[in-house]
Amino acid sequence: MYKWSDEQEMVRVAVRDFVDKEIRPHRDELEFGDLPPYDLLRKMFKTFGMVDMQKASFASKIAAEKAKAAGGESADSEPETEKADSYRDANAIAFSIIPIIELCRVCPGMVTAMGVSMGLTAAAVMSKGTIAQKERWALDLLTLDKVGAWAITEPGSGSDAFGAMKSTARRDGDEYILNGSKTFITNGPHADTIVFICKLDEGNPPEERAVVQFVLDSGMPGLEQSKPLRKMGVHSSPTGELFLSDVRVGKDRLLGESEEAFKGSGGRNASKATFSMERTGVVAMALGIVDRCLELSLQYAKDRVQFGQPIGQFQLIQLKLAKMEVARMNLQNQVFRNIEMAAAGESPSFAEASAGKLYAAQAATDVALEAVQLFGGNGYMAEFEVEQLARDAKVLQIYAGTDEIQVSAVARSLLAE
Image 1 (tube, rainbow, N blue to C red):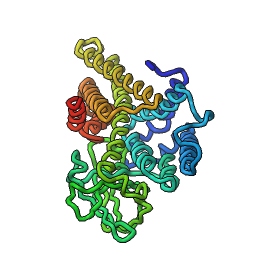
Image 2 (image 1 turned 45 degrees about the vertical axis):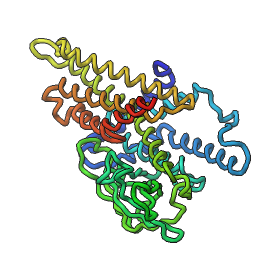
Image 3 (image 1 turned 60 degrees about the vertical axis):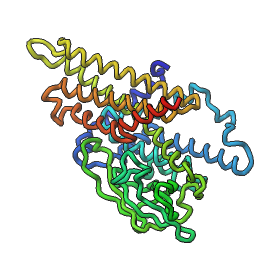
């Protein structure tokens, strides 16, 4: 795959048109007016039939799992009517990535809010939950009927998410008592469903405790969700804190309803798998930011006249534009590779996902800052889009693992060969 197919291009144009007409007019409200993004996202899903596709896909997966559990057909062997060829698979994957790219041209934060709810939170339930738990929580997350949050980061942890984790689950008869706090939680203020990641306190040292995952609902006694935090960028993605004080839950809220899957490194590996998915998604986000920055910069270089000629005639400006195009091409090729890998049923390794995320985050930040520089004083003004995109791009170097953590993951993998 080296370019969008005709069908994919038609979808891309349609999504861009929707974003320009239905979302761009609300950019200031999303950016400065504390407008939550969820209703706009739901409108987009309804317009493009995404809800029906999610429901059909979910029903197929659940039916296969129930058949397997009943001793019938394996969930791994798909009936011919459900088994799509690689072209159709690639199309489906492309159709899920195109909205990410197009939304990031306007409001990258909306993708963060969407991805954490429909991606990370739903994926945690779908990968570790029982069939009953998937039916109870996952479908509402996949359709955005309910807003999800994936809560791992704590005030004292950051990059050392597991080693410094203090949140605990303590057994109390057939139930558990949860305590702890989380911060920088995407969708935290508005989340209906929360995957809470903590350590199982069995009286053993914290470093020896298993990492477990529970599903919580907003409004549970002892659970407090903060108001949205003020932050540098991605204002269209509400971020908050969670506080748990003796929250009592039954075993039905422990993902998998069993501690065994989380013993040893099981809990950590489950969270790492979610991180890999998030890091791969950053590549598509970065492409949207870079594409829009280049588009705006090209037009400005043609229109802005200094010293008697358009600034695009100056070689230093041309260098900036050329580097932006190189970054755009590299990111687009990464996106195409990720689509082809997924269509082939393959996933990038943890190190490969980290490498892709490292490059994408740096490229988006560099291009956005160069766009601000190219615009000069105008680029520093909020009314010009590049100002927002520069602030929004920076978080890509921080969340889902900082650049420094990505470097470490890639280097360790290389040294282990």
